[in-house]
Image (cartoon, rainbow, N blue to C red):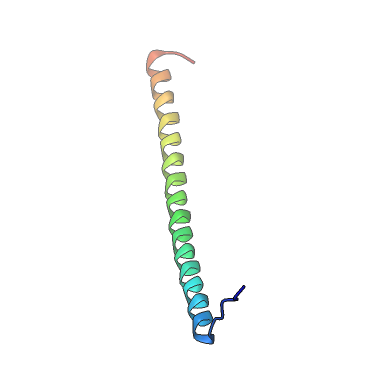
Length: 64
């Protein structure tokens, strides 16, 4: 069996490609983290609005 031989330049290209991929993954993770924070904030605001709405409905209907 013949073994594949890689030059230093080949190996450097592989390493740089892997580094580019890692950087792209890092960027995607950062975007996902920001999106999760935005969703959490929207959910909190919605929850607060629902609580306020329920309080208004209960007071206006006389329910406790």
